[in-house]
Length: 524
Image (cartoon, rainbow, N blue to C red):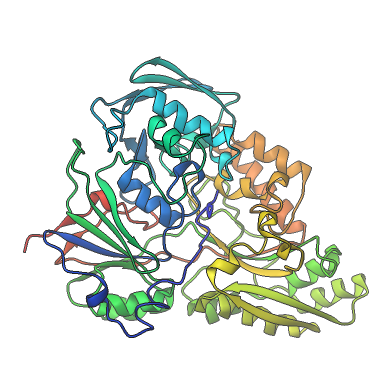
């Protein structure tokens, strides 16, 4: 949702392009600190710390440390949630959820104890300010306050994803009404300047593209986290992260699938390797409003010309599985197979071009400046050349890439043609589909895909509790997307992680994303 958004990976110019590339070793970039220090890699630098307007998973990883939520994801191998700021959360009926806050959770800066009024403000501002991630709150109507610590979330219609997305993720973080309205008159987006904190840590320092430094919150009265400091080092290039781990500069990181076999056979000393199932989805998108791609037959020709297993071999060393749609295995709505076979069919592709009356076509494909995605783009370039389509590959840094399809950022969306896209997920199918409704055209729906039936199903599916009935709706939604010709689904990748067992014990979500509050140092 997301987000971005999402996860969507806004991989920034991290240490790989900054400190390391310039020859400055990490040991000089990260100063020595007294006490227990956790050093971990993030795939991009933070760029939004307002939870009501959050963008990506790496921002939420930090928010989890500096704010609190009613509930949070449980660590382990199965998806679930547990209480955090809430003493209790109870579903009264399909559209009413009562919560009671724990007493004694204080905001820093003298902004007092967290109350139900802060919860009301935090949740309702997402809708009132038309946040790009307002979809996370679905049909939220209002928050009714019963007393200082108790309130009721009132929905216009039932919303099943509230438990898996809204409360334990980005928009579920609670901010201080007094602090935010003092910092921003209308209570809107405070961007990268949190007016106060309420979690076990505070943001002590931020060196863009170098370091995020979290230190203990002296006003925190809850369970004491294991580390005195958390150093999060942004590295957009995953190979840079692998080298940094080997050098001892970080103690926790994910790593590339093409290194999985080697690292499993010969892991670094005192290192635990874990393979986690990924929720990411990677696809080739096509701008259906571009004059060269308006004809659905052209788009279908491109779909059928793309051989996904060949791309998996080239970009992931054969370690990633072919996707059947947006929704990963294990989630409600995962399709058993796509409409188009993974290998495609060059003869069918040529037939679609003939239907379109196309004999010569040149296109561009945009990709993030990451080896995996540039390799995907180059493979698509080679595959489309087999049906007479010439493709120019445009590799872009994150600041440029993540604004390509946004109307709010100018006119570049008009020139976008093909794109290699990758977004993150949380454990509910709504988080994938909701960004492809018509209201998201020019926001996150960069393919400018439009379907009234898709929108109807997306709205209805969140009200259905029966998982089988709900799954049928998501099957059809993915069929509609694929049949539009605007998408060629590639993979969900994978999420292998490694960490130094002599230094720490890690806690993660089932998909491998770190839950830093649960990390524990090992005794020397």
